[in-house]
Each structure stands twice: as C-alpha cells, then as structure tokens.
Image (tube, rainbow, N blue to C red; front, side, top):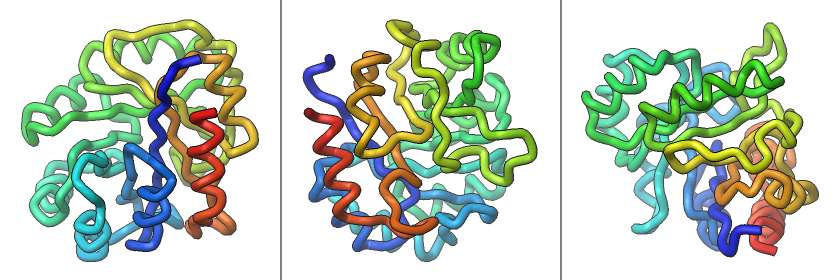
Length: 214
C-alpha cells in the first residue's frame, strides 16, 4: 500500500467545508462549476471559498464541456491551481485548455468495463493528471458525483504516464479497500462524505481521510 495517499474533497460549497477538508488533511479541494449539480457554485461565491484555502492545498475547478468564454471568466475571478475537465472533452481540447491558461489540467475518464481503458492511455498523454471515475449511468444528469463505484480490478496495478486519482463511489468504509486493490496514491470523494446532496459532513470528511491513510 502506498505510504502516503493524497485525498481530494470535491464539491465544497462554503468556507466551513474548506475548514473541514483542511483539518482532515486533504491535499486537494474541488469546486464544482456545473449548474445541474447540487454542488454548483457561481463565480462570486467560488472566489470567496477559494480565498479561504490555505497555501499548499491544491484548488481544483471542475468544469463540464466549458467553453473558453466561461473558463476565461473563471480563471479571472477565482484563484485556482488546476482545471478538472469532467465532460466529453477530447484530447485536443485538453491540450488547448492547457496551452490557453497555463494551468495543470486533470481529465476525468469514466470507466465501466475494459473497453474504457484505452481512453485513459490517450488522455494520459496530454493531461497533467487523470481522474479514473465510474462512468455515469446512461441518461444521468451528472457526469460524476453519482456515488457509483466501478470494478477496481480493471485497473489493479496499471500505471499511466502521469499521476492519477481514483474516484467513484468512494466512502470512509471502502476507501482503504480501493487503495489496496488499485495501488492508487490519490483518492477523490464528493457524495461519499455528505449527509445530503451537496451537504458536506465534517465527521465523514475526517473519517475518509483517516481511512485513506490507514
């Protein structure tokens, strides 16, 4: 098992969420910019939340098929460290976003079965990190944050040219097993540390980070 596992707490809505994630030892915090999500932030509120994040903790902005107009406004108004592309962005789009903003880009790739694995290699050649997530069910409103896991054995022992993060259905109860099975050094959680959609629970955040380090 990796000696140190970095945790990302995604979908923070306020400065109290930031405090809980920081206290638990999270290395990344995620802000969601997607109107269909219960974790969606407008740019004004996001600027306040981002400003509360201490130095040394990576502030990640999650967007879904966002155009340059929106990303221009986001980068201008909110201090972030990384862009997370969580839609159907192509490898070419990933490269274009990296070039335009000069920020590291994490690309989320949904996995349901072995047919989805080649995409991880393709994005691993252009993104700075890849987020290996559970593929959303057909017709789902949300591309992530659905609380679904995939068969972790599909990626057991696999490596890509860039750092990667495991997401999808992780909870304080199963994160240690997921780490042991996949060898991941980074884990991402959103709905798994909530008491209701969009409502982060400080106790669950603490339990998740502790279990990831166990």
